[in-house]
Amino acid sequence: MSVEVSPLEQLVNSVQDDVVRWRRHLHEHPELSFEEERTSQFVYDTLSSFGGLALSRPTKTSVVARLHGAHPGPVLALRADMDALPIQEENDFAFASKHPGKMHACGHDGHTAMLLGTAKILSGLADALHGEVRFIFQHAEELFPGGAQQLVDTGVMEGVDAVVGIHLWSPLEVGKIAIRSGPFMAAPDTFYITIHGRGGHAAQPQATVDPIVIAAQVVTNLQHIVSRNIDPLDPVVLSVTQFHAGTAHNIIPETVELNGTVRSFKPELRTEVPRRMEQIIRGITEAHGATYTFRYEQGYRPVVNDDALTEKVKRALVDVFGETAVVEGDPHMGGEDFSAYQSVVPGTFFNVGAGNVEKGIVYPHHHPKFTIDEDALPIGVKSFVAFVLKALGE
Ligand code: NI
Image 1: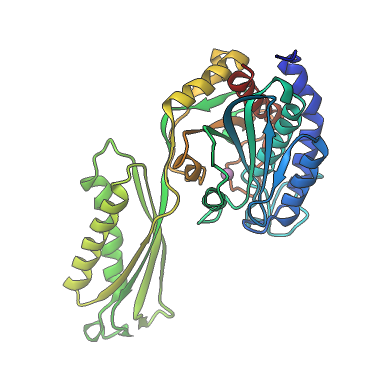
Image 2: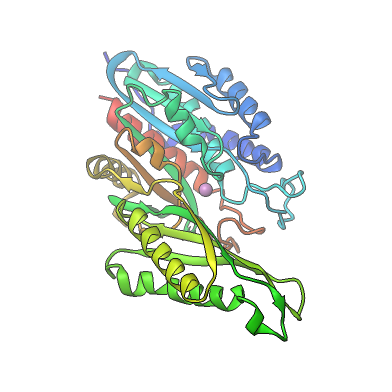
């Protein structure tokens, strides 16, 4: 049996005001990673009001809702992240953050609101669905080890056939959707180096082992890895972002601390790059009579989109938004723990444009003036609903 489904546009319009209102509420009350207590309670209560959803809280600050269609079929998971960032908001709109030093500066407030809107629409269409939709409201995307892996560990992906996630994206104009198969976002690894020299008086360098001069060579030589050792067709970033040393102009310090990040896509590079790094650090420190400690920590895995699923989602998006709105996504070196879901089931992650130059919505993600064009919210809802109806609507 199949039930008459009202046109998609009408469905999305019916929740549009709610979605904007939810997003603004969440924006006003940001919570940091692993601390999303009010946020998850708000999500739980809102989902409860729709009816027809089986709710659970796999971790303290996450919520999962299951919608069982009237007919058997595959299980689709849709994911939204809910956490904010430790940034002081510099926007002055009425619903700006009420919590000093905390801000939804990445659009996760919008992600949560869009997935709530999607759940509201689909919970009214259960009779027409062939399969299950699992709505995953994830905590802690911004802070390693991340909420996604914790949720996978609790079993939220059990029985799931495919997982889809959206990131609102301010560098992309509202109205555009960017999606691509294969590698989409990089693995963000971090490293911590300490160079141990021998401190002393700046006027008697011969009696010291100056760790600053040595560390400067380490920084310079680390740049050889990407430029000379890695295949130029494999994207890799190695950035030293912190160089800490010294207390006064006339003291050669004992130690220098160098920290930074490595971004890459290929799994083998995540062992090859640190191996080369340590060779360089060892060689330079040994040559100058210093010692070192080196710690390399793997972060999230790279986001690699499943070919077949991405093609399916893309077709659903083109059907709804047209060929010109759906563009090929550019891979970039940012990280995302959506990859944790993709390590267990086929997944695709894509960007919904949320920037608008004419409205002055031009700030990058994680900027104190970041915001989204709220016209992107119904586009995100429509994307989710269109795909679910295409995949489970028979
Ligand atoms: Ni984000």
